Length: 238
Image 1 (spheres, rainbow, N blue to C red):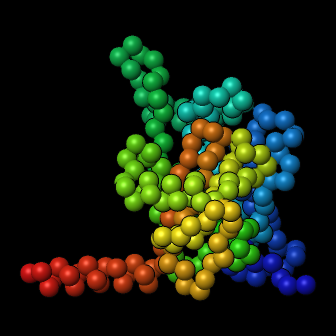
Image 2: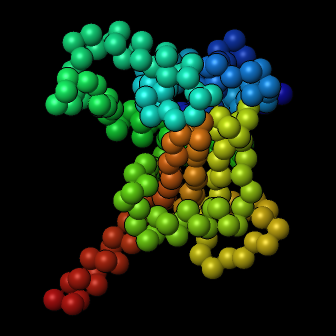
C-alpha cells in the first residue's frame, strides 16, 4: 500500500503520523443537522500543516458569522461574536458609528486569503491525487465589487462549462476547480484532465452561501515568460 502524503507540503507520512484536514474546516458546519455533514472532504496532512491553520480557520469562521444573513448560520454568528470579544476585549477591531453602536468588524485579508489557498490546495489534492507544487503561484480575489474583465471571464468559464462539486452539502461548501484553457467547448461539462506543466488552474469556492472567492494558480515559469515578453515589447517600442 503506497504511503500517504501531506496535501500541503507533500512529505510522505507513516500511518501513525497521518492527520486529517477537513475541507472546509468543521466549524463552518456548526448548528447544522447531521445530514449536512455526510461525505465531508478530508485529506491527509502532517501534524505541522494541519495545526498551522487553526487560527486561520477560526478567523474565517468569525468572518462568516459576522457577515451572515442566512438564519441557518445563527450558531456560527454566536460563536464568532464570542470568539472576537474573547480575543479582542478592548474592542480595537470594532467599528463604532456616531451613535456609539458597533457598525462593523475589521478582518485582516491575509488569513482570509490563506484560508482559500489552503482549501484550494486540499481540493486540488482530493480531485487529482497529487499536490499543487511550489511551481505554481496562488492568487486570490475576494472582492466581487472589483473584479476585472479577466476575472469575470474566468468566473464565466467555470460556471458555464463545468459542474459544481461540494463538501458535506452545497449549502456549506460548493466549488469548481479546473485547468484553464482558452477557446474550449465542453457541452457535457466533463472534468478536464490536467497535462504536464499546465499553465493555469482556476477555482471558485463558495461558503455557506455567504462568501466566495476566485483562486488562480499560475505556473511560475509561464509567468516569467509573460513578463519577459512584456519587457521585450516595451524595450522594442522605445
